[in-house]
Length: 166
Image (cartoon, rainbow, N blue to C red; front, side, top):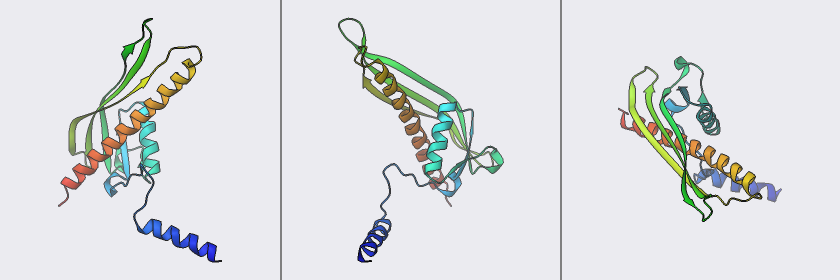
């Protein structure tokens, strides 16, 4: 009995002190439902995943949305940073650039043509043993770039909503 009460008390203390998981996002009410226009499948998946984890929702119509994300342009690039003595790439820089507008549910532009750029680099040793793992590493890093861009959009929307409060 005392073990259960101690565990219960610890749970209450953790929630009372503001403890939350790393990366957890608190969405303002206007951001709980978002409609996305013109996004790639990868960006849409990253938005859906982020909003699901934050108790938000990616809606299918503008009428249901609290905010509209209008994607103007997306650009993903992989650049070689360095090469080895035999001419193979040693290191890559992955860059994702997103240009977007944020509109409220009435269609009023809150943020016009904002560009976010996120990047990550990774070391790429060329050998028959590492080719598959390096391909997987790039796929994981690419997903992280999209997730980081989504968090930046949310931060920008949050700042704009705070600025427009009466």
